[in-house]
Structures are given as structure tokens and as C-alpha cells.
Amino acid sequence: MSNDRLAAALREGRPAIGSAHMIQDIAITESLAGVDLDFLLVDMQHVAITIETLQHVLIALGPTDLSVLVRPVWNDPVVIGQVLDVGATGVIVPMVNTAEDAARAVAAARYPPLGTRSWGPRRVSWLGGPAEYARLANDAITVLTQVETAEAVKNLDDILAVPGLDGVMVGPSDLAISLGYGDDRNNPEVLEVIQGVLDRCLARGVPFGFFAGSTEQAGYWIGRGSRITTCSADVSAVVSGMATLASALRGSVAEVAGSGNGGR
Image 1 (tube, helix red, strand yellow):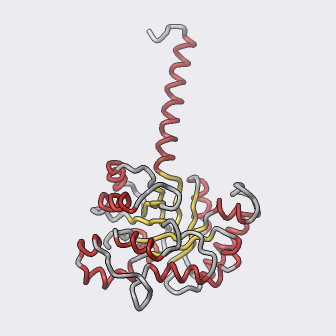
Image 2 (cartoon, rainbow, N blue to C red; image 1 turned 135 degrees about the vertical axis):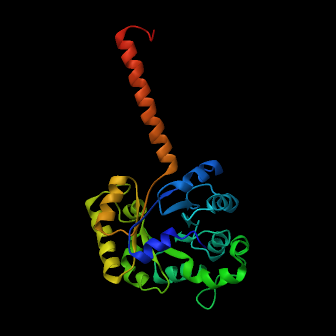
Image 3 (tube, rainbow, N blue to C red; image 1 turned 180 degrees about the horizontal axis):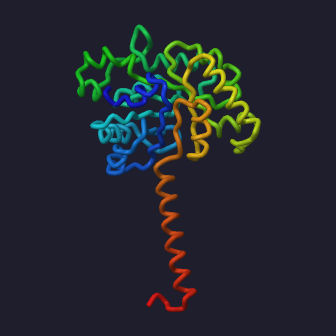
């Protein structure tokens, strides 16, 4: 419950930044603990990550105050409960299209009388004691839902009015597909819809979040008021870094070939 850097950012009204953690190696997870981010996103919806792997990630990051948001496979109370029981500090629930969908996601993350979450936190209750966890959990867990369809945009005002919802995250790729623009997530019409979502969030005081594919895109939306921004992924950073390394080495090889000395 102490891993709450994201919640602190939301309380203080400052932008929170994060990235997706996709590399399933605990040594890599531990090395990310010192990175100056507010949260890591573990995506169980689109990445082959099991609840056991997630628990290992959370154990590795336990000594830090780096928050861990998890995107479960679906808006399923059982799955959301499992994710929270192993220690996630929050969830990003996909494919939430109505206020009823949003209310179900919030309820799954809250104990009665505020929700329907079943008691059994196991690992997290051992860390701080079950009484302490029970006292803090309802207020400490961050619940975000995704806006990634035309239906969600249509029902946005009702979604934003759901009690206990801590914010929404726009998924630009799925939104572009839903709006009929395929993978053209930067289409002006798509950007206009996203701006409209942001404007409605600002007007109602509900944190707006965005899945950015680049630091430039992240900076654009942060500048416009995004409060929760996740950018790229660790695997992308590795590929980009190795590509840069390979390019530099190929340049050296080309210079040697051009000089005709064969490297001697």
C-alpha cells in the first residue's frame, strides 16, 4: 500500500508519467525500480503475462514507491480481484463503454459497502497486516477505465459521473478503429475526438489519461492537460537502443571499408 507514487501525483494535481513493463525477467524488473517514473503498466490484456508472473513483478518492485498499474484481460470482477490481491496499486480496465461498465469496474476494486470485491488479499495483507489493508484499500486503489470506442465517447458524461472512478485513459488505436479510421491514430478527426474527451474531463475535474506511442506524442497531450500518460514500453526501448548501437557499428564498418585498410 506504500507504493503510491501515482496516487500522490493525482492528489497533488501534477502529471503522472509511466511506461509499459513487458520484458518478463525479474532482473530487468528490479533494474527498473530506480527509473524516474511514477508508474509501470503491466498489460495482461495483450501480453502473455500470468497472475504468477505479475506477482513476481510486484515482489521485485515491493521495496520501491513505484506504482504498478495493471490492465486486466477484461472487465471481470474475479480477474480484477486477483490482480489487486497480489498487490497491484491500481487497474486500467479495458473496453468500458457505458456508465454501467464503469460502475462494475469500480465495484470490483472496492470492498463492501462501496463495492463487491471479495476479501482475500493474501500477499498484500501479509505485508502490512489485514486490518491495516482493510482500512486503507478502498481509498488507496486507483481505478481507471479506458475510452477506446465511439460508444464510450458517446456515453462519456455518464461514465465520468460514476462515483469512485479515478480517471479515464484514451486508447487512441482502438478509438481510431472504432471511429472508422483504421490504424490512423493521428487522423485529424481522431485527434479532435480525443481533444473533446480531454475537454470534458477537464470540465468535470476527472483526470484524463493517454497511451502515447512516443515522447513527442506524450509531451503534446501532457501540455494540453493529460494527468496520466503512459509512453511506449521497455521492450521498445531495448529494440531502439540496439538499433542505434547497430547503426553506429555499421557506420564504423563502412568507414573501414571506404578507407581500404580492412580494419588493420
